[in-house]
Amino acid sequence: MLKIFTGDDRVKAMQEIERELGDGHETIDAANLTVSDLPTVFYGTSLFASTRNILIRDFAAEKPLFTELPKYLNTPHNIILFETKLDKRSAIYKEIKDKVLVKEFKLPEPSYTVVFDIYRTAKRDGVKAVKMLQQIKPTEDPIMFTGLLASQAIKDFAANPRGIKERRVLAELAKTDLQQKTTPIDAWLLIESFLLRIALC
Image 1: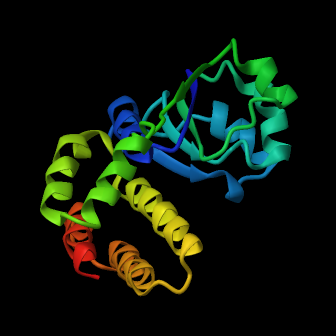
Image 2: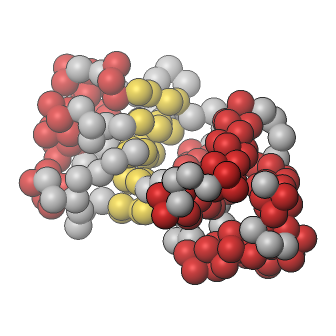
């Protein structure tokens, strides 16, 4: 059976992939395949099992391969194509979408107004802002949350480019963003620390 998974919630997608294909599944990067490899991938058997469990990454990104996909919809194997991007306007997608299961894993949309309220509150009361954050944290993504904070900090700076506080807040946010990407510290702890600091900037 062939399935297509797509979307930006990679964590949930990978959990579902592990559940469906198991720990010992084969993983193939489509960038390493050629059209001549496809019959072996989709119909070839192994010495150990007649049915294979295969994850193929970014198959749709390789146009020569994706064009061939309709020929392989009846694969006897359990195959999941995990697409970072999937052009739903393409002719191939339109041809196959009703013949295979397509599952989208989307991160929840951030609660923009609540995030902006937290930012505004933090500028005068960091402790209260952290308490507000605790209420929405389970449904938010920390990286997207930081991006929304950045949009507000940049907006403040654009309105007052000579403001000392606006510059300091941007500097603190840049430091928080860098720490999220380069340290093992929990991203939410870094955000809470930022919220507690900016009233003092």
